[in-house]
Image 1 (tube, rainbow, N blue to C red):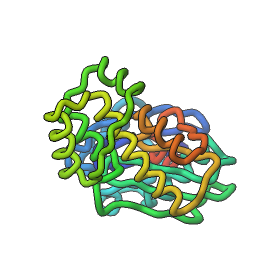
Image 2 (image 1 turned 60 degrees about the vertical axis):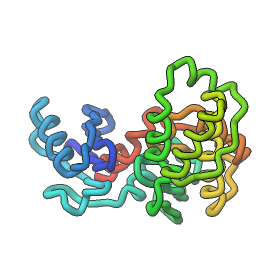
Image 3 (image 1 turned 180 degrees about the horizontal axis):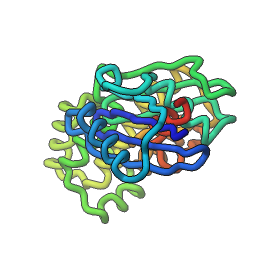
Length: 246
């Protein structure tokens, strides 16, 4: 029996399928403000890609209750199970997605025991970083320089006000790499306080698309004084967890 997990994310929709213990399919497509439609298309792509007839499906993410097929689990439950597959001994997870951030504590079986969630504001999420960084039109060289730059102080964490603050700093002649470093450090400070509201970790699993930002990881480690570990494909751990729960 093939088992599959479908994660209907706010930015991207992901599908992972296993035949026994072997992963046989994984794909990520943009949600384009219609995660249910993206999920239906992704499921059809998978079904048409080979001899797929009978399977168990778990659906999670923002559009899960509107999806016409599959069992439904929360993304928090799926994230805990997916991260547990990589790091069974580590209990604490930080999940930075496109529209929200979560801190999850799991037990030795990969089940959720406690969590906190920020879904009311874009600050500290992938959306916040995407909006600010796209506006800066960074070159690869500037990104490299930002890793070594002295971070400037960014006071605003609201996406709108932070964008205005960045524009003002650049207009006054602030070096772009220092501004970029400041954005990542201020985001890391906010996320660190968010993590510490649940626990003071020695180790932290960092999952979700936000884990791809190396500068964010660097400053988060400094703020928490903890070792951060990242799954091999941090944007897929929710879908992986969903498939394993299937």
